[in-house]
Every structure is written in C-alpha cells, then in structure tokens.
Figure 1: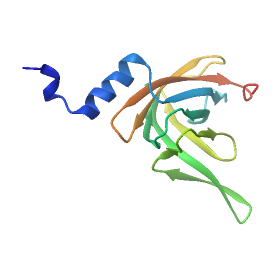
Figure 2: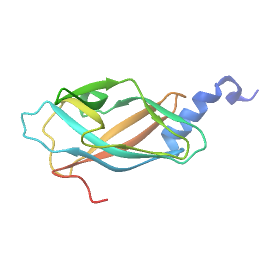
Figure 3: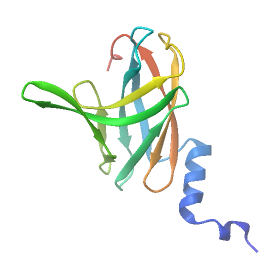
Amino acid sequence: MNRHALIPPGVLLAMHWAFAGTGPVSVSQAWVRAGPPSISVYAGYLMLNNRSNQTQTIVAVSSPRFAKVEIHRTQIENGIARMVKQSELVLAPNGILKLEPGGLHLMLIDPNGVLELNERIPVQLEFANGASMNSELTVRAAPPDT
C-alpha cells in the first residue's frame, strides 16, 4: 500500500512548503522597527510576492520570540491613527503586497527578551490551504533601502 495515500493532499503540500522552504510566495524587505528595551509591542514590515496564478491567503503569523503576532492595518479616523486587526492577508495572483508603515503591518506582541539591532527574528506564515512558510525579520532602526 502507498503510505502517502493516507495523507491528504493539503497536508503533503504543507509539509513540502515547511521543509523545502519553497512555495509560490517569496518574502523580501522584512524588518522590525527597533525600540527601547521596555517596549512590549513592535511593528513588523515585509513585502510578499505571489509568484503563482492563484490567490494565496495568509491566515496567521507566529514567532517564537513573541507571545503573539497579529496582522493589523493602520486606519485614520478623525485624524487619529487606529490599529485594526485583520483576519488574513490576501495576495492576488502574480501580485505584490507590501506591509509598510502607515498601512498593513505585523504587530509583534510581548517579546521574550530585548531585541538587538540587526537581530534576525524568525516568523512562520500560515496559509489558508494548510501550508506554512518560515522567514525572518531583521531588527532595524529604519526601513531597508529598496
């Protein structure tokens, strides 16, 4: 009997993405804004490139360096910036989605230690199809050059 016959196709795809580090989505310009040692919430930014002809949806992000990671959008209401939690990030086919200051971003909540400049913070992106992807955010004082 084929041992893979018992594993659903979505699980096989997730295992492939997680272990091979491949998939239709690539990450670039990934960074976390540095802050004072007492800060409990950081902002993370990155650019996602969907190289496939299918919509890709990220439904969760996590990091072993933080208690929680949430997807947020900055929304201005009556001249005041509010952070609005988002349930997912939708990447259009063959599209680019930028998480940047003043727009979509990651809220990295309750770090388990002080973040140092140039430290690489591991993150895992979870997709709606069950696949996952590992990446890193670099702690920086300013955005990377584009």
